[in-house]
Image 1 (cartoon, protein in one colour):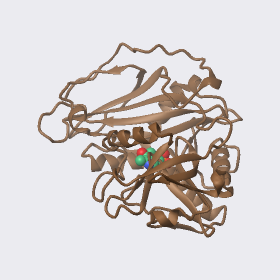
Image 2 (tube, protein in one colour):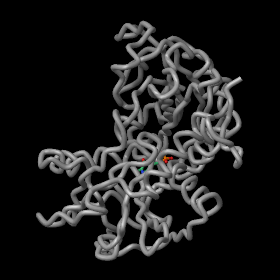
Image 3 (cartoon, protein in one colour):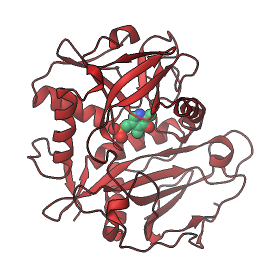
Image 4 (cartoon, helix red, strand yellow):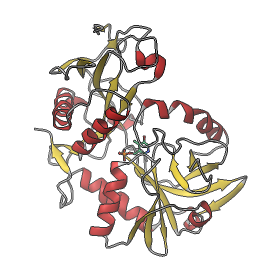
Length: 350
Ligand SMILES: *Cc1c(COP(=O)(O)O)cnc(C)c1O
C-alpha cells in the first residue's frame, strides 16, 4: 500500500478571518481529517492532522483515471452558539453509494458523520458568525494507490478539509441568467451523472466558460438522450413553479441533491404545495411562473431568465418569486437553528 504523507503546508492560515470579506473561495484552515485503506481491507481509524499537501505516486489511479468522489456540506454557527450540520448522514449515505459505483471501499455513514464532526470541531475558530457565511466541509475519497491498467486502485485515501465561505448572495437574493446548451451534456443514461464523482466536473468547465464569457452565470443542461428535458444547472438541481405546483426533474442522470430532497419534503409537508418529480420539456419549463436552482452552496438561487439561441426567456420579470423567496428564507433559517427543526434535520456538533 502506498504511503501517504502530509508535508509542507503551502499556505499559512491564521484565524481570525475577515468575516465580512468572505466569498465562496478557498481559505485553508488549520486541520484536516485523513484515513487510508487498502482495496481489500476496511478503513483504518482516521485522524485529524494539520492541513497540508498529500504526497502520491504519479501512477495514482485518481490522477490517471479519475477514481474519486466528493461531498459538499456546511457547518453553521447558530445565534445561540451551537455548531450545526444539515442532514450529514445523507451526505454519508450518498458517498457510500458513490463509492460502490466507483469501485472504492465504502466508508460507513455513521463514521463519516463522526469524522466530519471531528474536523469541524478542530477548525471551530474558522466557523463564521451567524449570517456571515459557513464553514464549507469537503470530504474527498480518492484511489491514491499506483496502477497502470484501468482497474481500481490498490489503496485509498479519505480526506476531509474545510474552508470558511461567505454567503452566496451578498445583499439579498439575485436572480441569475442562465444559458441553455444543446451542444454539451453533463451526463448520459447509465453514466455517472447521479454520482458525485470528480469525473463529472472537468467536462463542464468548457461550456461553463463559454457561458460566463457571454455574461451568463451558469449553463442549464438538457438530457443527453432526447436533448429536450431539463437535466440540471451546473452543479445545482432545477425547480420551477407551474400552475401552483412545484416541479423538479425526476432522479436518473441528475445528482440527487440533499437540498433538492429537503425542498420537496418541506414544500409538500410545511408549505402544502403539490410537488412533482418528472421529465420537464424545456418548452414547458419556459412557461413557469418561477424557476430556481438548489444546492448546498447557494441553498436556493432564483433563475431570472434562460437564454436559448440568443432569445432570452424571463421568469416573473426577472424578480424573485414568492415560492423561491419563502424556500430560501425558511431553509436558511432552519439551517441556522432559528426555526423549529420539525424533521430532525439538524445535527449539533458536540
Ligand atoms: C452537489 C451537487 C448538487 C447539489 O447537491 P446538494 O446535496 O443539494 O448540495 C447538484 N448537482 C450537482 C451536479 C452536484 O454536484
